[in-house]
Length: 90
Image (cartoon, rainbow, N blue to C red; front, side, top):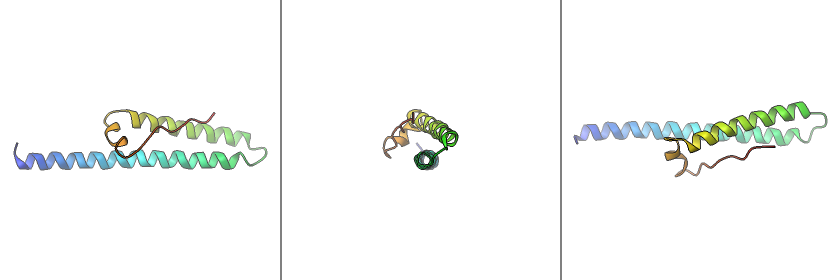
């Protein structure tokens, strides 16, 4: 193969890995923030509706994140960088 082709393919792969890592990190951070919000809401009396909303929001983020971690080609980045499935809230 020509060196220029190899360099171009390497650059494309690098961009892909950075974009995928950023997506997974963003989803994980959003889910963690939602989980913290959910935990804070449990301390407030009369906040059942907000707790339910926070639970649904977190579970949706966890679902999206878990799907990204398991799907190809994101799984190529998820495994080596330690991204694991997030638990669902009951």
